[in-house]
Length: 161
Image (cartoon, rainbow, N blue to C red; front, side, top):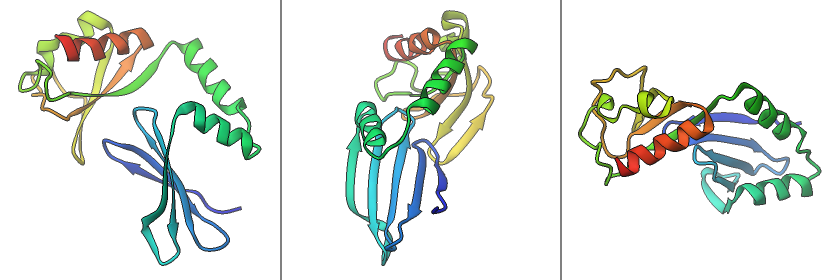
């Protein structure tokens, strides 16, 4: 069995890849948004994709089924999350957000939604446990923990004020 490498991509997600028996690199980028991209690289250039394919969540499940995989692991993860009632998501601060240039505390996320911002990712830099005086910038990625409805409310607050 090939060794699957896991590479964190700050602000993007996680890249999983392995080298096939014929020397090609095959992998998937799991974006924080839930989107998946499958890619294949030539043996001579592991960073240049010969093939890149965007997959929806449904496409990903269908491919796993076609390859003989199982949905058991995914189902267990969903059940565990449902039982615990806890979710985590990465929410971008869009350029048109009323909170660009303002402090985290101005949005009153915890008070309004019950969710907590546990980190901010800005480019390649992470700011864990930011305080209420942390300034938000366009394209910041907020790491939000809370209930699924609380996270959706946070997304709405950031987009509409």
